[in-house]
Amino acid sequence: MFLVSNLLNALAGVLHSVLFIYMWIVIIAAVITWVNPDPYNPIVRFLYNVTDPAFRLVRRVLPLPPMGIDFSPIIVLLVIMFLDWFLVPTLQDLAQMLR
Image (cartoon, rainbow, N blue to C red; front, top):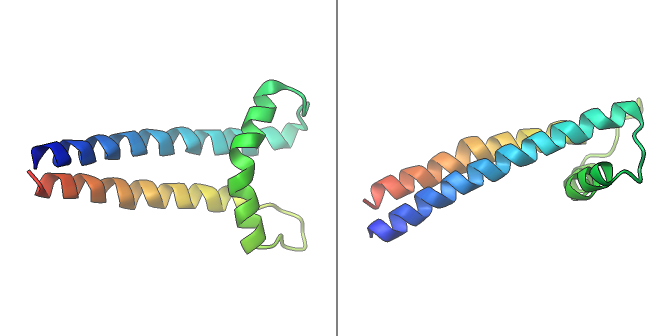
């Protein structure tokens, strides 16, 4: 059982790292929209390609308010934080129980 325990613990660590990196990518993508970047810049295209699917999903579920403020990055960040605070410790606790 220690193999499954170690696997779950490693999976929790990798998931935490991926969520942390994606959180910063979302923050950078949200901040970069304030300065009207060049859409042909490879970094800007990477940021849009990585974050647009999550933003589109949130925008489809929650339409924009009439004032035009886009809350989708905030919602995506909240979901990332929830997953990091709920799923990662749950996997670690499960790994600890299997030891």
